[in-house]
Length: 129
Image 1 (tube, rainbow, N blue to C red):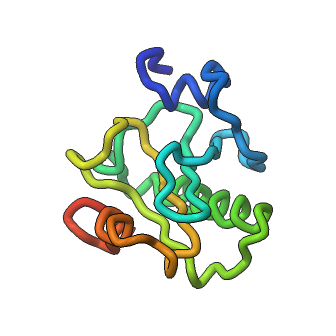
Image 2 (cartoon, rainbow, N blue to C red; image 1 turned 60 degrees about the vertical axis):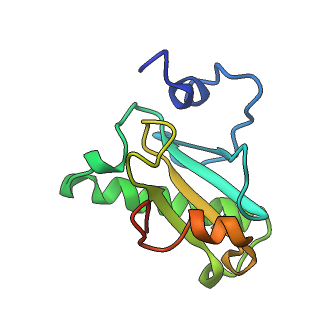
C-alpha cells in the first residue's frame, strides 16, 4: 500500500468520490475513468500496489488475464455485450499519469472520438494492448 497513490486509496475505499463497481475478484477493483474516452470507460486495478505496465513479467500473465476478464464482466453487467468492439490496454511510461498498474477498458471502440482514437491507439508508442 502506498498512501500517496490515488489508486491504492481508491482500492481501499478511502476516496469517497469514487464508486467501485461490482467485481468478482477480491484482488482487483474496477471503477469508471474520470475522463472517459468512450461511453463505457473503466479502469481495472490490482488492490495491491504494483508499478506500471513496464514492471510486468511473465509471471504476471494470469493477473493481466484476470484483469481483462473483470473488464469484460463489468461491460456485460452494464449492458454492453459486443466484446468484439472493445479496446483494452495500458499506457506505456512516461505516458501513464498514475504509476499503479491499471487496465483501460473502453467500449464501444468504434465510437471513440478523434482524440481518444489517438490516445488509445492500438500498439502505439504510448498505448499497448
